[in-house]
Image 1 (tube, chains in turn yellow, purple):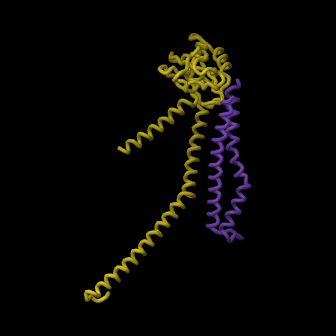
Image 2 (cartoon, rainbow over the protein chains, first blue to last red):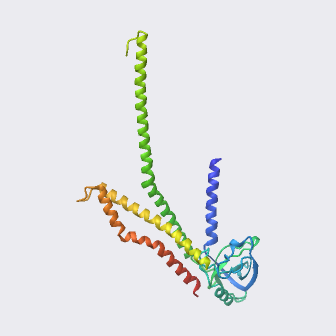
Image 3 (cartoon, helix red, strand yellow):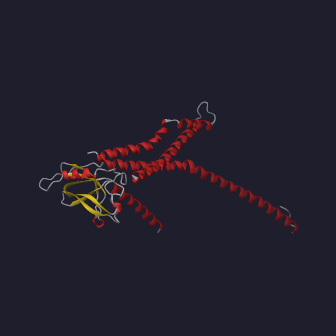
Length: 225
Length: 90
């Protein structure tokens, strides 16, 4: 029972970390831009999936004019991106150029007969049920729909996270070796001291008791031992 | 603007915690290294273990390695500047 709870807890934490990274780290989609437009959007309970009110393009907290980029993938499935500033606030893309990005995306518009494939760097998820959209960060014209893009940013960020985790582990081990273990040893030694003293007291008591019972024995005519 | 100030305050607090942890860790490894070195074979002219370690630690406090911990503040600032440049410049 306890084991299941422990494993459930671990799996939940790992899943949360994975989802957080999957949402935050950049991804690339190779698409064809079909439309760029603005739309007044009401942001309510889903506001954590939109730019925070302090960031550049998001002035109002509830209703705001958001730029969108409509795109189509090679398999004719569509993706709609939002295009909002992140500013200095989470996630740390420090994006201030959503107007420029919108213009670049508009410039790369193409139709089905003469496609211009575009790699859109973005983070976030498209969940229609919550009305949330991935946020486009950059657009770049590419040769075709099958271009291979190496996710350098993800490689660097994940390796630094790994290095950070190993560093925290080493710091903890150093702290335990230098600070906790000596204290534990002292406590153990102190405890041994207590036990020794306890035995000495017990021995004295035993001696006292033996003498006392020996003294009692003199009354019963037994020889003293 | 308030957001900017808030970001700076939180970043400074977070990086100060990291700086403190790093300096404690680095000092601890240095002290351990000195202790082990003396225990292996006491160097010439250092009959007293405590004095040897204290002198070594004083030297460490002035060393480049100790000063490099300031990179904890500098590297994130540089990284942020580089990201701002590459994300926003066409």
